[in-house]
Length: 389
Image (cartoon, rainbow, N blue to C red; front, side, top):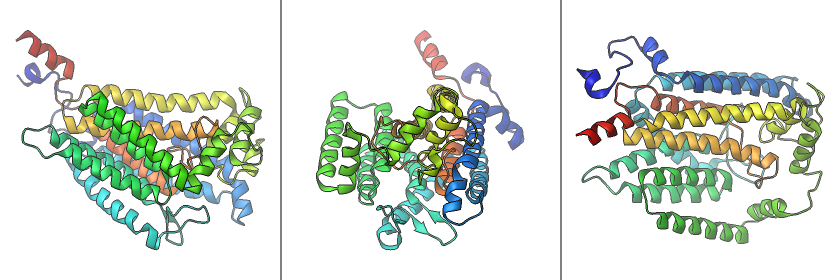
C-alpha cells in the first residue's frame, strides 16, 4: 500500500545503518570526491617539497599533514552522510553559531600570517580559519529560515536570512576576505531564487552588490589592488598570476612531465590557491579537464537528485551546498587562468589546507545526507497524480 501511495520504497526502516546507507548514498558523487582527494595528494607530492625546503622542514612535511587532515575530512564526510536530515540540521545550526562567534573574535585574537588579512586563529601546531566552517552551517541555517517562511503562519524567514547574510558578508569583508563574502552572498542568492522571488528584486540585489563593490574599490587598498591587477592589460611575469599563467602555457596538452614543473619553485601558494597551475604544467590540459569533469559530475548529479526531493528545507540546503562547492572550484580555477581577480580561495579537496579540507568534508557529508534516496514519491510522480485527479 505504501508503494502505491509514495512510489517505490528503496529501503526498509528496520535495515541496519550501514547497508541502508550504502544503498541510498550517491556513490558517484562520493567516488568523485575520493578521486579528487587522491589527485590532491598526488599534486601535493609535486607542489609542497619546495616550500618545505624553504621552511627548513622535511620534504613531505605538508604532504603528511594533508593526508592527516584529509583522513579527518573523509571520516567527517562519511559520519555526517549517515545522519538523518533533521540531525544534520540541528548540528549544522549549532556549528554555525560556534563559527559565527569565532569569526566575531578574529579581530581580537586572530592573526594574518603576514598576508594582510586577519582570517586565522593560530594554535601553534596548526591554524583554524572560522569562515571555512561557517559556510556549510550558514547554508543550512538560511535554508531552514527560507523553509520556515513557506509554511502557513511561519516566521519572516526571508528577511531574517537576508539580515544574517549582510552581517556575515560585512564581517568577512572587514578581514578583508571578499572571496568568501562573495561566496556566501552567492549561495544565499541561489537559495533565494529557488524558494521563489520576483525577478525585479533579484535585479535590485545585483545592483546593491555592484554598489558595494564600487564602495569597496574606493575604500579598500587590498580590494583595489586585486581589481587593478586583474584589469591591467599587462601581466607582470613575476607576480603569482604571471607565474601561474606561464605554467599553464608551458604545460600544453600533456604537460612537461612528473616532477619537471618549475612553477612550484616560484609560487609561495603553489600547494594551495594555485594548485591547478601545478597540475596544468606537469600533467597538462588533460589533467585539468579531468578535474573539471569530476566537479561537474558532483554538481550535476546532486542537483538532479535534489530536483526529486519533496522536502523544501532539504532541497534548499542541498542546492546551496552544492552550488557553493561548485562555484568555489570555479573561482579557484578561474583565478589561475586570469578569468577572475585573485581571491585567495582553495580548490576543494585538492588544495592543501586543514580548515578547508575538514570543512569541505563536513559540507559534502551534509550534501550526501540530503541527496540520499528516501522512501518518498518523486516530484514528477506527485504532479502526475495531482493532474489525473
